[in-house]
Image 1 (spheres, rainbow, N blue to C red):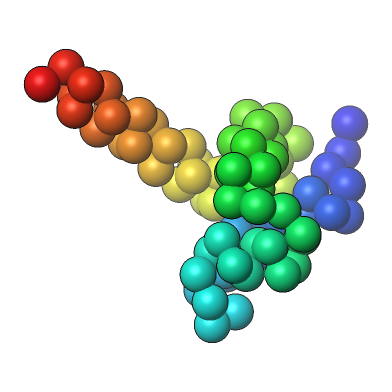
Image 2 (cartoon, one colour):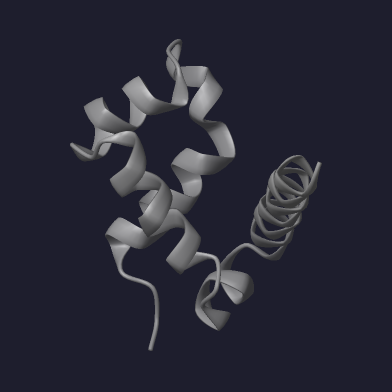
Amino acid sequence: MDLTEHEQAMLAFERRWWRYGATRASAARQRFALGPGEYGAVINSLVERPEALAHDPVLVRRLRRMRATLRLERSERHAA
């Protein structure tokens, strides 16, 4: 299954969100009509898909690394 145009647009946005001159949350709300939690959930599920990895491997790997780092930091804070 290929990525939809909307999914491709979301990946393109994630690659360049800072160019919109706003925070990621407000830019995502304007561009996709999604709140921060909804947008994050969509991106998280999208980066798990092999089609997303094939479409933009550098971005998807970077997002996966960032997510893993955040999870590790959260677990370390809770353990402390």
